[in-house]
Image (cartoon, rainbow, N blue to C red; front, side, top):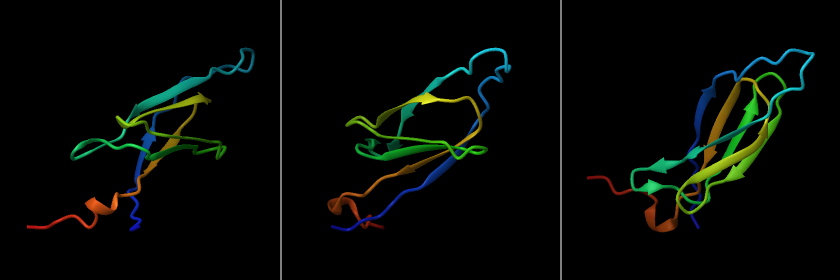
Length: 94
């Protein structure tokens, strides 16, 4: 099997800034991973906090949807890794 990876990095804006007197808010990060032909199934999505290196990871479903639970507010780098199906790699050119 040919393994190729797709890596996309984006910055996620800070979500709130709770005071020390209140418990820290927890959020859910969700969305879709899409390619030229629609949603990408079984892609690994990871979000890493830029300050604490806290990591949350999950896989996309058959439509390319993902949901990461219990994400603390902060700035994150979100990356996606997808393994190409052998029938689709390498892509045809021309």
